Length: 239
Ligand code: C5P
Image (cartoon, helix red, strand yellow):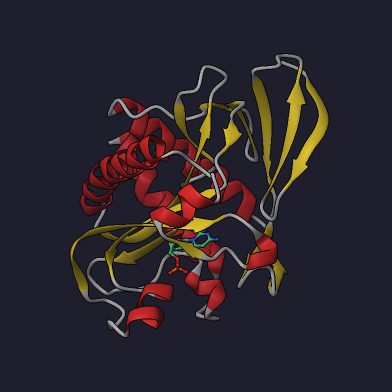
């Protein structure tokens, strides 16, 4: 497979074309951003860790019959993935109150929720990724009602698999964000990444934060936290 021109550069990844029009080449960067890009830093090793963690989690989901755009990890920083057209929605699942949910509702961070909640945010940097209702999604024509139902169902299914998987590693999956794309034949496919950049992961014994909140809230070394997650995931893989 040949790497061709840069198609898109996001905050954490670059996407390149390949000689196959159905496949793109992803390169994970070391940039860390938070609060819609207001807080920025270069953190050596972060790209590599997120690439490895995402590759392991997408492989785990595939074993559980949950397909994604992931094809293979090429190197420390690089992956091949299926080209999809990204639906401009961030799909967030919450098991425990934290972050913007706690701010919005006053429910204290750390309080388990009665059931896993699904939320949709509009992927739009200029608007600051606002929370959307299902009526808003319909009005803006971001996805059909049927597609929204599929996104919810897939997100909940992924939550079930990931929650029990992380539990085996003594990690609590507090919440996470997913992105989905459409394949050329119209199927909805899990895309983007699943990593400590996009999940809240707490040590089940100590509640130590092992995710991007370490960066957002200046809690210590981000790479130490992400390395702990990777080591646990690799431990299971090699067990
Ligand atoms: O900030 P908030 O509490 O809404 O985040 C919920 C979850 O979604 C967290 O795991 C966070 O890391 C993730 N998220 C993300 N990208 C965003 C917003 C939130 O990965 N743009």
